[in-house]
Length: 396
Ligand SMILES: Cc1ncc(COP(=O)(O)O)c(C=O)c1O
Figure 1 (cartoon, helix red, strand yellow):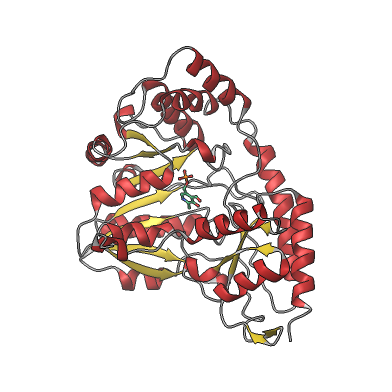
Figure 2 (cartoon, protein in one colour):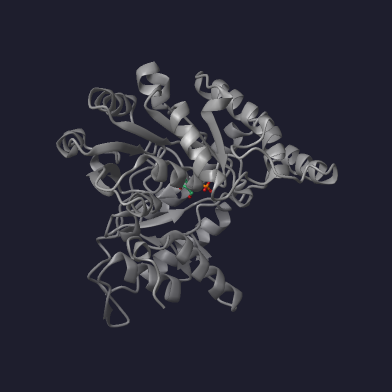
């Protein structure tokens, strides 16, 4: 079959692929603890459930405006004002089918062929593929473990060219769990302002930060930064509403209008009753603090366990719910007589022989690493770490 050439320009999402494979193996009777999916185990907030059922029963099941109905847009701008102290007009807001869809729309309306887009590496798997799908060129800037996975500013400056159109920012970060320092965010914002570059700020993990760190959005740094930033957020992580597929973007009106135009010819509005329900959920964020402290407990368990094993080192994540340990000490060793050469092979062997399912670091641009999502009950994390340790002891 001859598919469009653009289908060869990007990769399938590795996290979705690995998570799907583990689910399928477990359905066949295997017992694999999946550390793959970036999905909180908490339930959807009760007000959202009630409001969804009510909306469906009351017949609120018809098409809505392409950019989302007034209720959810009102709730989003109020939520953003409460969380960040930054105000947006509803005309600066578009609701899409998840933050991934918001980011896709942004890349399609902003990037031309030959545009360069800065992506901090290790990166969320989707950014390079979306940039490539738009015909643009991803340009990677390293974030090193010794800097808490903050971007290297000298490298960033050296990679800016006249073709640089945007910088994609993701703090708290998937996969490293880094929360960029205020100084880092200020410096990135200064570069964007001085060199006339857009900032795409993916803040989907904004409510999951630890150890007294506070989430800082570039849009809080002043009008000149806000005017060139597209802020992306959504219901999946902080509200545990992954399956509802609701994300949003806030930004300069011409960009939002272009996204509405694109959405009008692709998906139209997100699901009407679910938007009405999410509008209710957005009003009550009192549970954020208790969830963050539960995630912190899990973080401490998994990072403590990983760092206690020979050959593994893990930077302590400051936010999100991923541990991103370095496994270079295990690569080159043999399991059952076979040399484990890279992160993809290691992840496969762990799935098949240890009953533990992480995602290989190569998918995030970081060979030698594995990503563990710890959005699960502590007993499961502990059991997974016991299995990992037992496997490590069998390496020769
Ligand atoms: C950094 C980052 N951005 C965006 C998303 C997408 O979220 P959504 O479920 O809203 O599409 C994810 C999901 O894993 C993510 O990790």
